[in-house]
Image (cartoon, rainbow, N blue to C red; front, side, top):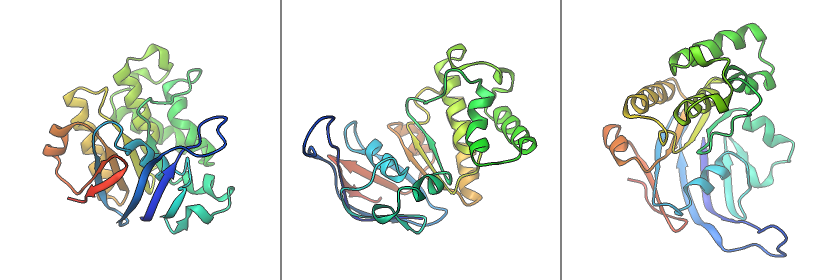
Length: 225
């Protein structure tokens, strides 16, 4: 599903003539199809940058990244949006469209993917019911609490049953009950074949749901324990 061989990443600051310091350095690891990984490390370790790479938002500046059989650095630009539709992403800052209802935020990627409207209705209603927001389907993001917005973002990411699911601190705005419900859902998706990668600071959650971890520090991979 995912292979990194000596991958590094540098960002180019706006207006700068050269790239800045490396935020990721020499990352090499593989994640098989259907795998589950925790992504751990302190703030600034490079977790979000790694997720951006895996979501194809940026390309590596060194090394070789292969996602679902496509070498990202060599792929044509037009090929990446098609591949990205098979990747679900739960952003730390939600990234909901403010003018759309919760229902339409979740439905949007399904519509972009060309799914029939009748199937969209069934899938979106099912997932909103699962995350406990069926009564808030017509509410816009400004009318929802932070925890409710987080659940909409999670519903949007998983509604299409992606091949690869990436989550950046998905429980940060959830209480313990909702966090556990989320983990049940993610574990079920993983059991059905979705590859899942979760970045988190929640040590208690990791302890309750042990699994293989990728641990980063200063942009480098410390271990795969």
